[in-house]
Image (cartoon, rainbow, N blue to C red):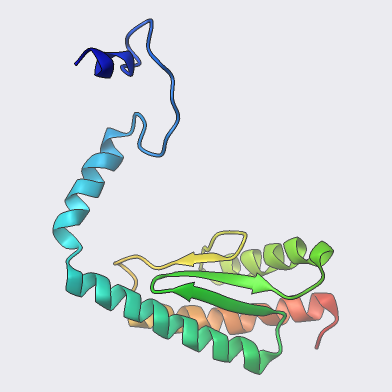
Length: 144
C-alpha cells in the first residue's frame, strides 16, 4: 500500500514514471472492456483478415512495380520501401499523404494495423487505394 502511494501523482513526493497506461484510466477501462469482446474466434477472424490484406497488397505491389513490399503477421503489417536509404522517408511520406487523400490513415512510417471495426470491404477498398497511391510514388521517383 505504501509503495502504490509513491506513484500517486497527487503526492508531493511521488515517483514520476512514464508508460503507455500511466495516468490513463480511460485506456485501462477500454482495454478491460475489450477483453469481453475479443474472443479467440474474433481474434482469429481479425488475423485472417490481416493475412488476406497482406497477400492482396503483396500481389498489387508486385504487379505495379512499386518500390514497396509488405511484411507482417495477422492484423499487424508493415510497408517497406526498396528505394535507396536517402529516398525512403520521402517515399513513405508521399505514400502516407496519398493514402490520406484517399481516406486512409496509416502510420507515416508504413505500419498498418487492422482493428475489429475493419471489414473485408474496408480492406478491399484499402488495397485499391494503395495500388493507386503507389503510382504517385513511382512517378515522383521516375520509376514508371
